Length: 238
Image 1 (tube, rainbow, N blue to C red):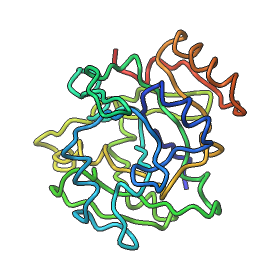
Image 2: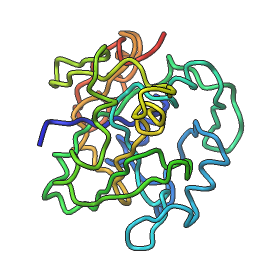
Image 3: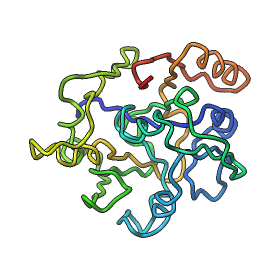
């Protein structure tokens, strides 16, 4: 199986919570973390229902979601200033800003033999058109995800420090060829971890600027963790 990577974008201030807890928890965790929310409320609410067929009768919000690249339609809409930033208390602060976003980076391979339940989708879990399907067998990762829309040229966002070769620059739908008619939803395929992700599964944190790296290094220094923090402007839009 090729070495694949997964990305979870979060608001930088929430890193201190993750460092304190030693894990990133799902939205419906029995002890939920008080974090900033950067999402569309209607989609989040739907992910808390049985609209999508998840393993063992669970719902999407029982899982911590990752995506298979840093460049997705959703990270773009954050960059464009279209998504509200909601405080842990539920107050809308402003529009989310790309400069305040960071990526937690892991790999599917790191979960093999971990005892953690994982699964993954072939399309975005925000719509039924097309209907996403879920697979939990990691040996089927290469067959289930539409890697052609990730691996074709031109490639951007490489992270040489960890061996990530990057992703195709383009992710929007096109009328032709047929495989690009649903490219946007394919690029939003998700890797899902049930319950919580221990921080020892996070191989690095990617930030846009050295200034943000310094901020996070301050958080890391007063914690018991030592996760590498990389400045990689190419994983962002601006």
